[in-house]
Length: 379
Image 1 (tube, rainbow, N blue to C red):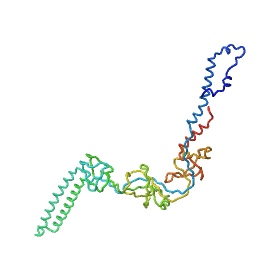
Image 2 (cartoon, one colour; image 1 turned 60 degrees about the vertical axis):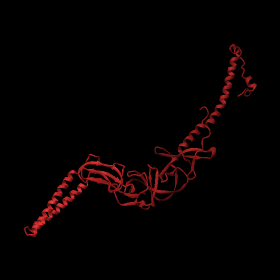
Image 3 (cartoon, rainbow, N blue to C red; image 1 turned 90 degrees about the vertical axis):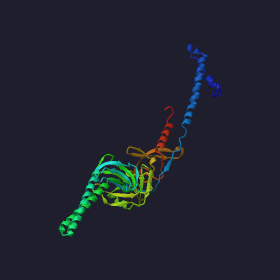
């Protein structure tokens, strides 16, 4: 600002005429008058430029992404929670009593069919096998003597039959004892991955004690439970989509199997869907979500990002008008189900052709900024 901003008439008008009888006004010094002029000049400069600076700082809000809602064809599906499980898995159990003396695998280790997994101390079983072998040798010798004597008619046929029966029993006992000793070495029945180790080295094992859990990662499936009342709709399904929330991945399954039985207590039927062999990072026990595709219907939907939830209330920001006359308003909706693509069905609250904000958070910020800018100055 320069002196040209103030006309001479304005400056002269700032001179005060002393009141009659006021000696204090008459004694006003030129210095005080200069201070008054300077204060009014500064107030005029900054007072006139502050609103402009605030307006420049605020600026115009960025354009808000919007969507024109319209009824369109969407895939209708039947959702169900599911769990991944292995088609081929084995729980190895001890078949002989003894202490675990050699543990060679751990959880997560890859094994091949026939690999030695652990050993059990089966010295007691080995002693029993030695005793059975000795009894077998004695039974063979006794049968040979009885047969020789029978040929000379020194013994009866009944004595020879008893010797033959004793030999057969001894052979069976020796064979059983040998098999028990062989169970001391536990090998992998299938190729796969050790899922769990259920016993540690030094612990005592008895027949039936679980030792290891192994599964084949090349054969996985998901299992879902579907209520009986939904089975007629399920039988008309044309396929399924399997979603893995932890992986953020969805795959298509062209077929599935509904088991011909139902649980007597929960009245649900089990549905199995085989997974492709090349599917990575999927393990047994992982949660999955299955959507059985029933067909296509015309519905009104909105993206999940446009939705505002406050407890049980759901709403969207609806834009009316165009350009500078556009306005945002929050409108409550009645929602339906969440579809396979993540969009949400709108049952009531919106009509075809209305415009909604795609991002509810940005819409709320824009609405707040508009209300602040339109507020009266100095309020």
